[in-house]
Length: 75
Ligand SMILES: [Zn+2]
Image (tube, rainbow, N blue to C red):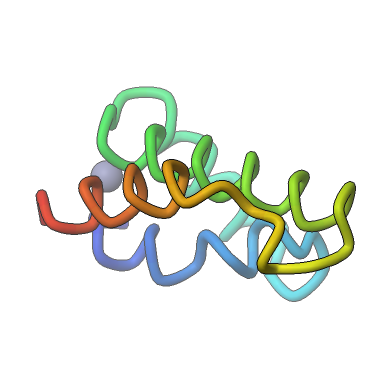
């Protein structure tokens, strides 16, 4: 899997259900060595947690969105 594939599936990975076992393993392997995707994964996970805790999208700090945009811009 390359970065594009992994990033395209990060959301599914975070949802925990849609991917097959081998897809999940491939993503995990990729995240071990790819700093960019790992960073993206961490940001997404933090965002998910914030949304879950706050229950509302507009409670997510603007700074976090700014960081995510920065990471996306690197690709
Ligand atoms: Zn990658």
